[in-house]
Image 1 (cartoon, helix red, strand yellow):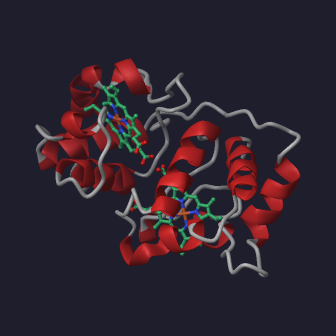
Image 2: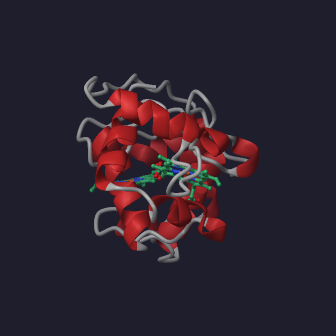
Length: 181
Ligand code: HEM
Ligand code: HEM
């Protein structure tokens, strides 16, 4: 994602806008918000879709024609946009907060905050993505995909190891908590 140009990325993002929103704030909760995400993480995902290390019927064909420069420019554009806050189901955030900050010692689930940060801002130096304000439905889909091993582009199985030990109720709750961060 080095050398990305946000202005050039804006021009190239016209085809992305239908799903992710012109400013990277998608409306459909199955389509991730990209606004404010770290550029290095966005570029990594695009490269992963292009090389089939991550697969999705909507997204994979979009990534195929992109050059390295396109990916860097698109990443620079979407990361420069302001993320709109999300909304959490308040009946689920108590368990979600407990999972997010403390994990589950009994079953060996690591605390999300250790990598994604206490406010969900992630850590660009380690390419840990920002999660704060993301759609709960999208978060839930990703955790289920990691749990089943259908998404396997996490270096060192970092996310697959976490998700494998989570229950449906824990996934649901932590997704709601993250949406409200
Ligand atoms: C996921 C970028 C076009 C639907 C993603 C992700 C990125 C991205 C970076 C991963 C986000 C994350 O991991 O948080 C782009 C760019 C596009 C584009 C730069 C234009 C070149 C589209 C279009 C659609 C779409 C047109 C709908 C037809 C999706 C979906 C996912 C996704 C459904 C989630 C896939 C999954 O569940 O694993 N996109 N996108 N994208 N995008 Fe796009
Ligand atoms: C990615 C949630 C714990 C490292 C993700 C994603 C979600 C997530 C939803 C996908 C983001 C997206 O597609 O935009 C969680 C939750 C956790 C947790 C709910 C606690 C239960 C951890 C821990 C680590 C970690 C403990 C570090 C050891 C990562 C990394 C990625 C990621 C490296 C990016 C993988 C890639 O490159 O595609 N996490 N996470 N996460 N998480 Fe976690």
